[in-house]
Picture (cartoon, rainbow, N blue to C red):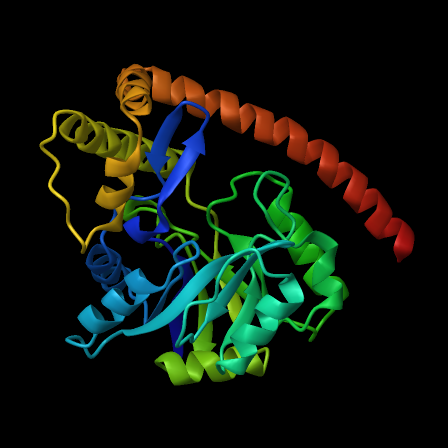
Length: 305
């Protein structure tokens, strides 16, 4: 029997992104909501991997105990000094900014598994060709957040050129319930123990495709509108502190000027057709850039054969 797993999912514990004067959440989705959506999408295993924090994953794991059809794995997307790395089956938090070698050592010391997310992204922090020198258990050959033609294609060709070296992983990198469920990793068996065995034995099957652009647009509108509401309440002193929601804590720390900038910028963004124009512009740029990079890589790839 084959089961499905999503090994790279975010919640509002992933914090806030900086866009010069504007600050918006990476996600406004509760850990519980990602668990519920994963169950609806037929996942046997869900790995919560927030940026540089594991509290949300522990919260999801506790919530997941009430269900017998899904296992929740505690993970972290760690910002090493050399690029992002996923640590799965963690017991303790691993701090950011360590060398990639020390980061991987700390993952393995906990009995965890190290996976390179979006290893060849040209716009997100990643390991690039360092993957050849590191003790990695797997690499993402399909990252659901990368709609460009280059990132996943290069990862797939690289994997094909090095059969048996890493477990091939397909993960959503979902920051919203809108952007999960389009791609996943299949494995023999059911539950986290079988997934772990499949990764270590390099018998995983990457499936699906990146989330469609419209899902990415829905996520962007969701986080902008969610941020606007929190920023407005914080500016008016009506956003109560909530230790269970670290996103609120971070919003309260933002200066008044940046709160106003976020509200104004957010209002401009969500007015149709601006989000769709923004999506068209970004995908056009990604397509142009990725095709140039892919042509260069495939020429080198064919020349090396």
